[in-house]
Length: 185
Length: 127
Image 1 (tube, each protein chain N blue to C red):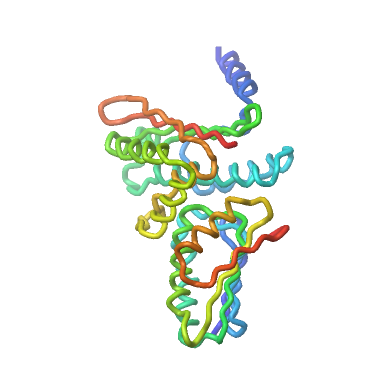
Image 2 (image 1 turned 120 degrees about the vertical axis):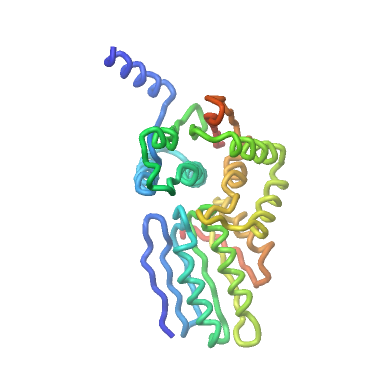
């Protein structure tokens, strides 16, 4: 059965034209490797430099969102269950004429509610409103200790040129699974 | 004072800050997960330089990519430059972008809208 499962997965990845996928804990070193792999992969693709840059930029933001989200600060809590909840999945694919970046990770209820309202706010904005919102957040927003500035999702929306497609799947009383699909024109 | 030279890496830009020439250059990519650590010595250098600057200070920003963690640090760096700009030195910024890279051009416009320094947005064939 194992062989068949792997073959099924292989066929799915082939059909979906997945360029790269990963499931596990997202570390700084992993990001360095993944970004370098994607850069060399895109070097061989017949894409305009403009598209390559867009994909790379959006990828950096998506992956660093995962990295900051699962940042383990309390070393004593490094048990298996926690590591699982800190795991994420991401996939980069090319379908027809556009790139897709998809991510999935667990999120607690409070963070989910906050994130959802932020995503809805961003999705309700047009290009010029996003530009203004980005500038205001850049100028007035405070930097967190993690070095994040609340600009990531706005930047992804601006650069991808598309709405941020998302879903929160309820898992239990405290956790949801957050799925994000970014289509890049 | 000493010049500041840092080699670029996979996630950080090369830095060439020359106190005698009044030339500050950031070049390459700035995509570290946490940018604060990287930008701190740059801001410290500008603080020290601001005490005895040359008459004209030119800042060349030649970035290929930068993440949103860096964007805040870059703004803080520009704001620091704003504070040293005055009678003793005239600070101006040259923001370079590669042709067709509208995102980097727009990023320059974002800073231009916020920062009160002469801010030139310059298109080049290759950075």
